[in-house]
Amino acid sequence: MPGLRCAAVAGLLFILAACDDRPPEPARLDLAPVGFDALPGWRDDRQSAALAAFRRSCTRFDLKADDQPVGPGGLGGLVADWRPPCLAAAAVTDGDEAAARAFFEERFAPFRASDGRATEGLFTGYYEPLLSGARQYGGRYTAPIYGRPADLVSVDLGAFQSDLRGRRIAGRVGDGALRPYESRAEIQSGALAGRVPVLAWLDDPVDAFFLHVQGSGRIVLDNGGELRVGYAGSNGHAYVSIGRVLIERGELDHDAVTMQAIRAWLEANPEQARALMDENPSFVFFRELEREGPVGSQGAVLTPGRSLAVDRRHIPLGAPIWLDIMVPAAEPEAPARPLRRLVVAQDTGSAIKGPLRGDLFWGSGPEAEAVAGRMKHHGRLYLLLPLGAVERRGAASSG
Image (cartoon, rainbow, N blue to C red):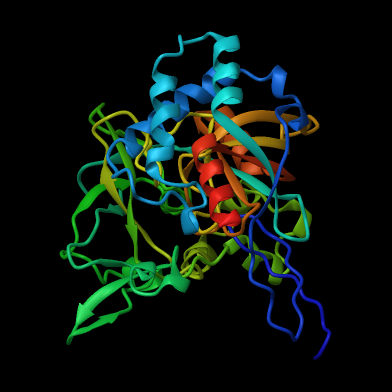
């Protein structure tokens, strides 16, 4: 039906997207230079907390060659452009707010982000769940947490074709061709039994499902120990939001969909829960984390409240970002509150798509879960780029 408008829900919660008979315009990131005085609440933030997170990103830049581009199309310049601010960051005294603020003001230039049409995007939250499990199968511990399969192949398509930069697929090689890996339903039916190592067994399949959504977690073992796991890969299937499925079936109201509401539905409908979770064919594999964590896609340890998951097709990992958004309070009855703070792009997610899309890491514990699970608020972001990268972009434009 030409001209028919429809709503599509993506991610754990939802992103409303208009669609019609014409192909959508490719999403793009537009940057407009602004001053630091244009960042709402800039002087009220504790930039020292963001500086600590930025230092962790600097450890990842240290592993790269100077001439390696940063971000899509070299949006963030070259790694060499990040060396001076990283060196200067190491010299700032911890907790010195004036020095931390001056560091960012002297080493970076802020840009207001838009997608060519809108200046506001959707921001959600994620956290590190605390789970109950065991190393061995038995009793109530029956939900497996799989390690990365030896035959899983992950492919960066951008290495083969420039217009596919930022896109990845995964599968296994068979008969000389890359073939799709098993889906969630097939894996849950035992397709990988005996072929892939199991790191732990959880006592709740719903907890296992949400561990896949969050990408990391801490498992309290039955013997008193603790196991921290982090993302190690996925089966390559597209992520399908079961929240969207519940809306389409009329089980949940569009405006009431939160992680807590989805979990409540699964727990209230145990006979249908497995089939609903299998509607999402994407399946995540994990690895044990021996150091502090969790670890984001950039390879840096995440900082609660200061690490942001972004779409790496638009935003450079490691870049500071100023947020001007609303977030829910920990108490369900309390109103949402404004959040204006500096964070660092250090992670990605299969549901985080678009130049103005962000997913804020809240840490672990009940309060982090309460806030992250109900966060689905709109707001603005401002990208901070090092002066060397800005000068390089200007020289390229004038040339």
